[in-house]
Image (cartoon, rainbow, N blue to C red; front, side, top):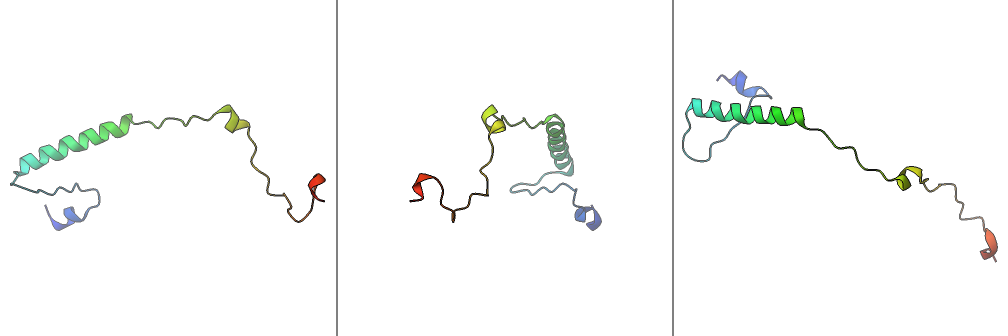
Length: 76
């Protein structure tokens, strides 16, 4: 590999903690992991969030409630 290959952002990175692997062993590991990630990404779907009928029909609290104007029989 050249330094240009190492600088690519899509190049796989692998750090060995112990022992020494041959280039063929590293290539095999990278191929298996890359294929499994690609397969998982192609079959992954996000489930639609469940929204209750209450949430759909509920209105938000209005912001136009004026606290400086007394109202109802609590106004005194």
